[in-house]
Image (cartoon, rainbow, N blue to C red; front, side, top):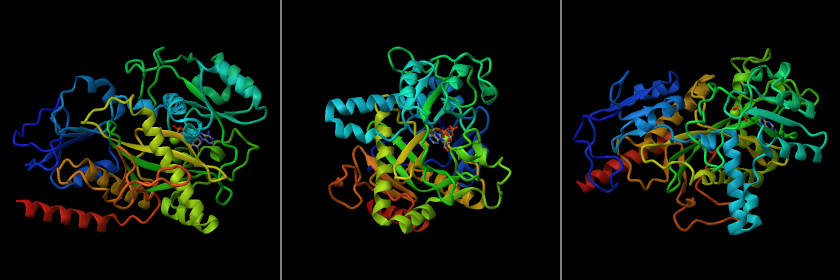
Length: 461
Ligand SMILES: Nc1ncnc2c1ncn2[C@@H]1O[C@H](COP(=O)(O)OP(=O)(O)O)[C@@H](O)[C@H]1O
Ligand SMILES: [Mg+2]
């Protein structure tokens, strides 16, 4: 329960133009002991609350949310770091189900061309409930590679690749063989109810802690874009402040996560070749803790521009914007909209040799643990800027299009780069206010922003 004692607080959530009194301090709580804790503890005016103390801001984990959210009273100004049913986007099976439904809806309402803009996730079947559909598809494409992923785990755990139906037969019988030790003696079960909405009680949204496991069988992208012969995927951060209306921010920085071993399709059992998760790669014998396995997105963007020219890069990054926006729209009406909630998502994007980006998954709890000094800086800046946007201090006007490293990408519609009406590119993608992998001069921007906000405040008082 969180019942702020500071009765003089009238701020957040009230109309932005109104004069607001600010709290003497902001009481925060978190269960995470990583870069987040450093950022929260260093934030001026924020004080840590332990145990059952009342809080104004809680960066909670999803298991806390599942058990407590429904019976927690929250005052107007209180903020919490997840939406109640975030798993509609962040569980692999629900994400695909929502995307498929959204694509159908677009086809009905706007035609095939519009629906085709949702073709950014590899063909996916939920197992075991779509097993028969999967087998049909499998038989149509003999010889291709598939990937099996537990719907609610992370860090590459429980994942395997296969080309023979026999591997799935074994899995179905609950007798999955050596590769599938995690599945042994775990009968698979569908948790989706017939109405298509996902029952919060039966949906275990905490990665790791699930009694029975569903999987998705997904087409494996056999032609990933390689750099130095190695596969990688991208981690991109998207901050959603509201679903109705949809208000989403894109962070300029992120990184590419490389595998340590040269890519080949001849050894599909080697996780060091095929899974780019840092948690997997850092256990590889070739891993150098100093070198790590990451490239910052700026470096990646520059590399691509030098190889393929700026236009190809613009198209790729605009295709990625399309992924962020459509995936959020696909759950817009499903996610329980609640003004107390915000969420910082970690998108996993794989790029193929045709420079097409594919959405692999969206994480509700992207890792906030730093793997190097550079990674530490990225994550602390990301979190500082997240707190600036969440704006517990009630400093913003609500009209900002940029706050530090975050650019407002969607505000109930595309946000144009310059003032004026939003323009649509020839490709039919939105040209929106995004600068992924571009210069992140956040310090300078924040200085200017807060100086001008103070100026406005003085002028109006
Ligand atoms: N369809 C796919 N094609 C190619 N590689 C994939 C595919 N799906 C996953 N991978 C690889 O496996 C890794 C883990 O998959 P992901 O869906 O992100 O699950 P996890 O929750 O375990 O991180 C990805 O980072 C990527 O390297
Ligand atoms: Mg992942």
